[in-house]
Length: 291
Image 1: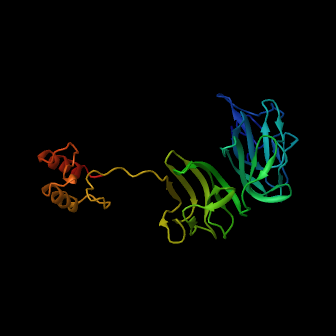
Image 2: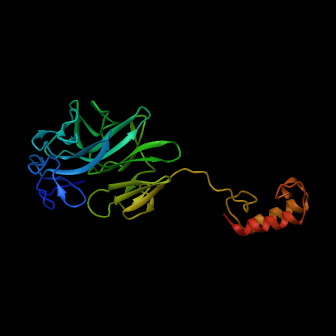
Image 3: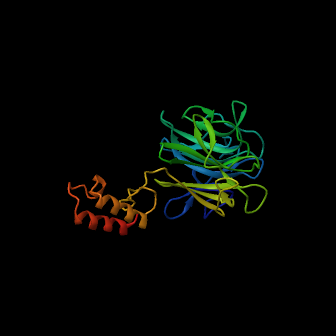
């Protein structure tokens, strides 16, 4: 499936949305599908599969003549309007989509600019299969990226932003509040403010891509457009770090010798019940293994 601002792709002429069947591009609702439409530069920015159906988000008012503000759903045979979500202005859009289970079941989350739910503006909205709700506080700007990541405390929803000079640009949803992650991002590569344009999660890392020079706030580390936010995992056990100071070095050797020749329990390095030359050899092996 391809979405964008195109008027045709291959032999498919529908605006903004088409699919490839393995041989050629096709319009979803057949050759006559007119695609997305809207008053200001209609475009599809995001897509996701939720409850087995394809959802698209962007800046549009209808798809193939079916009224659908910002978000549309393909039923398998026709485009539909999933619930009531509206644009606050002609430049409003849905820029990102993500399916996330908050503990009460999977829901579809969408981020964008000036999204209106129940007449109130929000950066992120959520659809439970029947109705839309606002998510967290309205941050302003544009919610450009959504991803699910587990930093060691459980899966959580992460949000990347742009188009607002007063924000920190990277957030995590905690108890329905958007909280800045790791100090946020700072100093744009170009332009007036930093931005996040992409989030990609792996089991232990959330990768962040965008327009920024520092990750971790104004005093953060140089990143120049891409950074990784690592999960809180238990550090490896360093057998060679005999004194547990976080370093494997000569001090560990001297500390071990002190315990070894004093015949203390710690001198039994391999915990076999004896303090002998085998403990010495086992410790030397661990020391050179490092950590």
